[in-house]
Amino acid sequence: MQDGPGPSFLADCPTRLAVEIIANKWAVLVLYGLGDRPRRHGELIDHVGGISRKVLTQTLRRLQDFGLVERRTEGRQIDYALTDLGRTLIEPIEVLTAWARDHGEEIVDFQERAG
Image (tube, rainbow, N blue to C red):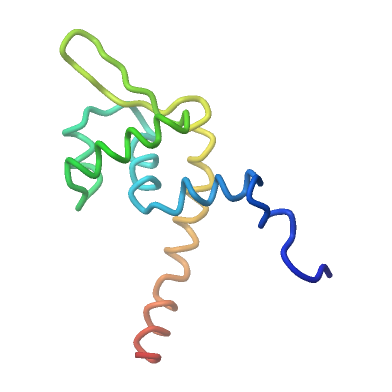
């Protein structure tokens, strides 16, 4: 076993970049919301409950900057879709979702006992 931080803790490690991307709860929800098909801004607002228009716009721009989402324009219609790279995150998000379903109640129970 290694003492001290491993390569994943180095500043230029891709692991840090991945964590930075998915650490934002809205990013994960937006990515997952685009997992089955492209959507318009308003559709995403309805699909991802609780997100404001401003935060959705900021999140979409950030995901575009990472190359995970693309903005498509057809005439006056604008929609957002996952890129090939963005689609690679759907399976890991599904694994996290399954973990949350399986263990979420345990976490809530622990928090209630601790608080």
